[in-house]
Image (cartoon, rainbow, N blue to C red):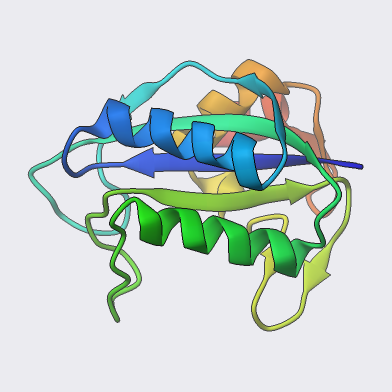
Amino acid sequence: MKKIYLGIGSDMGDRIHNLREAVRMIGESAGEVLRSSRVYETEPWGFSSESRFLNMAIVIESNYSPSDLLERLLLIEFALGRIRSARSYSSRVIDIDILFYGNEVITDGTLEIPHPRLHERKFVLVPLCDIAPELHHPVKNKTIRELLDECD
């Protein structure tokens, strides 16, 4: 079993309901939810929008491979109404990102773990710091708390 950290966000529809449903569905089909952060309201990152995001982080325990886990998370996003667009950053009903998969470093064309930009995003680091401030980033060689302290 691996400890896996996920970031979850929503800026469309009933945002809090979207987060709750995502966490419930993750617990049912991806792994046992061990801990959840508080929910934070944040500005969009990488694009302009009138709506604000609700963001949170969770840690799950799962024995699914990274690619199987990704497939399950994409199915959850689809079930909740996520429609992927060609634009990389846009409003969305739900977004679930794999932030860490144990302490593994994975780059296989489909997946990049740890998430390649998490150290630049307070909307990821703040909730992650709620549940794992001493979690060590295997590439940056710093804790989540240290990354948050350095983040603009």
